[in-house]
Length: 232
Picture (cartoon, rainbow, N blue to C red):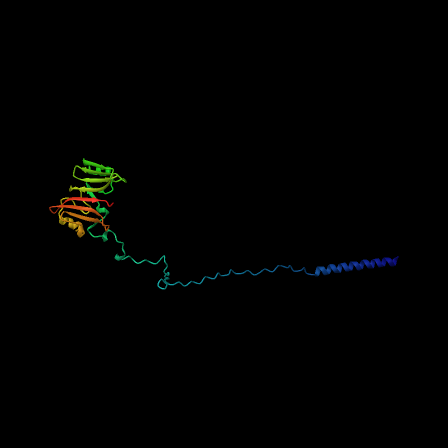
């Protein structure tokens, strides 16, 4: 029993001694150093590289590119007088045109083909004689009208077909009128073709058709009557 007690005492002493030594060692051991995460070094901002200047050419050095000719951009040569179409200017003076087949009366134009009502409202003349021929032509009615001033008009279906004037108030587009001299006539219209005139009558053809549409009657070397007519 005494022996057992001594063993227990030794065991207690041993245990106490071991715990004290552990506590002493722990008190003498320095605390572990605090571990910190490594901080990455800060980077300085990178400099943005400046773009290199692009070399430009001076206006003198710029090359001009001329487009190759295409059907769209090829300039056509300017027409020469020989290329111009022939018109009234190419006609001889002794050939009349459609414009010649009219009269100027009281600053108004009386042209062939004009309606009878319009014609008579312009000349404002009383009718001395009237004849209607409805049998000769089946296609249209022909009316022959003589007016107070000596003018004679032929209408086909109320359209002016021919006109004869003996009054100097009726003037042609070229300026000829009753009473003018032969010299004035030749100045404005020249002579007709050799087989188209005699001492008292000058027959002028319409353009180069061969049809007579402009007739001038003469008396004592002066214009006595002027007649215009359509080509049928």
